[in-house]
Image (cartoon, rainbow, N blue to C red; front, side, top):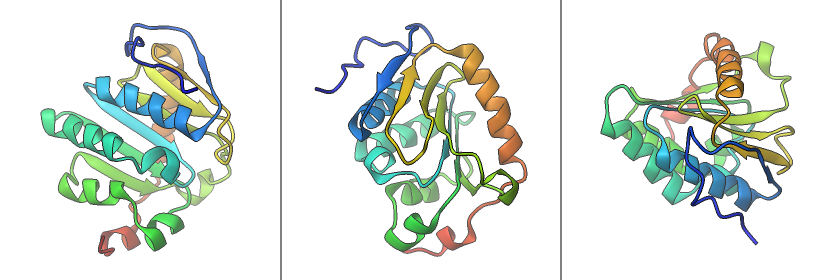
Length: 171
């Protein structure tokens, strides 16, 4: 039975919840992003379709960046092959608001990292220790962890570059 995230408030509800399936990850992410006001940072291996290629999630991310000019969605992906060959709903969303929703391919020197995480409003953190497994956790109020992970995210973001092959895909 899926976890009920409706009572968890971003930046207020503390406590780590164990996630064990793609549905757990997807529902936790949707719950956090729906409450976001400032930013979403995603570090992912492939932007797994079962988690990230969800119409509600894409709609919430798009609403976030359209609501206020200062809102940003920054996405780092280690392996973009699946997106290039099979498409992804996020690509089209990024095309609608390219200045506020950006994706970069992780620079070669950072490819060895195996974890995956999402930081929402520098408060909520969703993690997968191994990107190919659905064993992870979510905490809607993990500000210290969020700050630490955001620092690492930005260190990876700076040398990483946009994936040129994604610009030319027709979806």
